Image 1 (cartoon, one colour):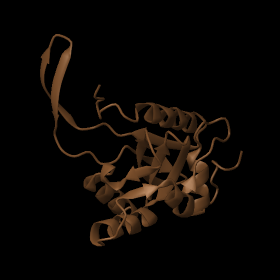
Image 2: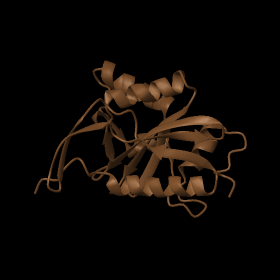
Image 3: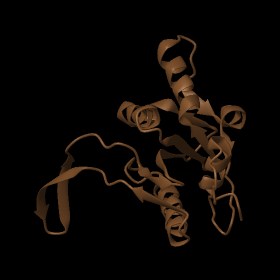
Image 4: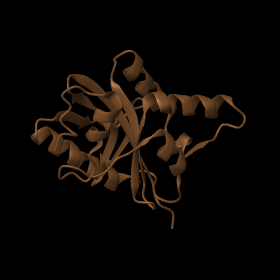
Length: 183
């Protein structure tokens, strides 16, 4: 049976949405899921047909400690590697613009389901990996768990949240007054 690519990672996104809701309730941050820009072309009974009007940016954006935040969330169901091709060029480009132009805290979060581990990879590190895989003959086309252990930051539960990624943001970006890790 073939599985749709459309719903992969939905449980992971629901987990992030729960954490974002808790961050907002606790007045720690406002992080929103960005809708995919879709134009509805027809409705037949209970079926809605549509098409993408333009490439989306990233999954999430918002504000934390007076800084912009932009990130993409990805989930890998099997194995110990995240294929870089799962990150679209327009998503990478948006993270770059948010980082360089907007001064935003930009990153990707990757869930490795089989290993039950989640990592945050800051944009500058992602950029180095992206450029090496696109320009070098020997550049890896994937980010393995071992790479994340070396270059990324594992996201753990904290303060009653199943995925306290802002605690990692506090450490990486040395956020003054960062509340995520103070609990």
